[in-house]
Image (cartoon, rainbow, N blue to C red; front, top):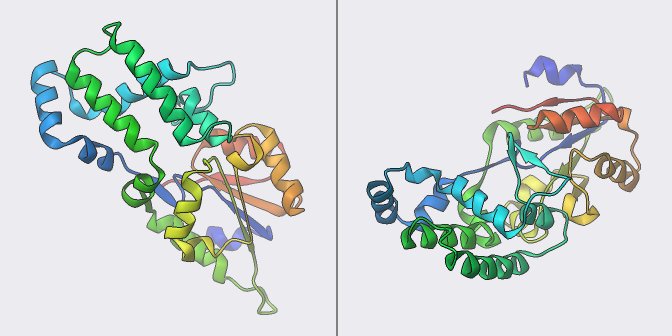
Length: 250
């Protein structure tokens, strides 16, 4: 967003998404947890790109919790229901890991995995992505462009020398990872006047319920807010409810 564009925004309340705007989830940590030697051996044995293990993991997680009629997407990919359950506060990471271990043993007897190596890699990956400390420590990293934008709105003043904007957070996020992320990056989160995550209200973007609960909790009107999110469908849902916004891109 250019300085000229920021100057055009007259709404008092600026609402930020989290993942894809302020923090970037990297898959590199997942691969490093599995180990380079295992990845190379997998490539030689199965003649497949070992970096596709993340997609294989998502396929496995659909066995743990099949998609429902209320499927959610992230960048065109259907999210496994267990991830959605975490993000709406229905299950904790530890409960999901118990489900994974149970289904893992069941599928192992049905020759679901191509080899013992693939089986071990997928289980190792699952144990990593449902470990909030490792996610915060090794995967989620601040996006410089997004944090710079946040600080620009935070420091902008009106003609009276007062803060021109109130900053809010509205994100699809689980109750296990979010507190650890706030603790690790206190300066970033101190910018916000209010924060609401999906796990707190049992609803995810782009469902209209989460936006309506946001407006009610912070006593703001949609037209008085400006929404910044990396997913077009989330911005479109906000616009339908009267909250203007734009799609953020790195």
